[in-house]
Length: 303
Image (spheres, rainbow, N blue to C red):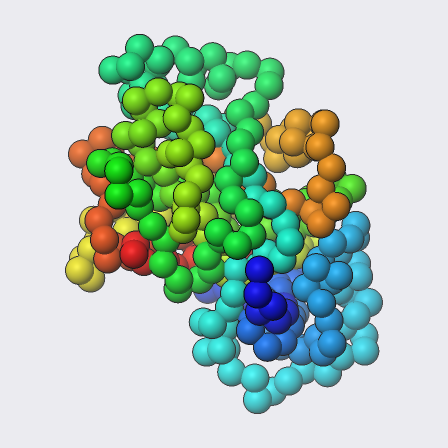
């Protein structure tokens, strides 16, 4: 993987009410030439800092609070530069969770009905053990305003907007970001054993726009919003709150780390509760906008 440099930025959120719920929040953005951090609507540059060395720790929030004491705001740093942010991933693997929302359970059953595997996903939803799968190595992850892809051998494709956890090597949830788990519903529905092909391919994962580092977990009422535009016109829009998840994030992390080590930490997509209708499929040129309260907005186009 080429050296793209490091940048940590804190992203200015439109919804000020959510900010009031999360005092002491920080955001870190990884840009091509530096690391910038935002706190209390001020931007700071973290000079000479390696991205992985910065984020791969327990107590990331407390570390950044202490770091702020020796930093001065950079008044001439333009927020427009945040548009060029890289995905907030260094050497971390990206994993994903499936069937964590009731709507996802219904959608997976619809996909697999023709193949006779509908009850397969019903059992996963009700089971003690969650569905976890490998999504992408870092070099296959795209960032904000970059292009995601749909497979050329797929006829039914959707984005999956997901709250994504950043987990330390010790298994603690240290930060959050937005994930787009691109998925081929036609391939997965044909046979559940085709899941790796439906989920893992070039341009199938997007992360960004930042790492959101609060002093406490996200409120249960935090909303995830998906908006899809085609030729500038809205073709799909829906929202859901994270309290609709059947499984707690800590439960998903516990299973992921049960028999695996992640020396560089790990990103974990927590599943989607927003699924476009069966009549909808992505097309080349579609714009996908995913917003999560307090984190920001991840925007990608379909290559």
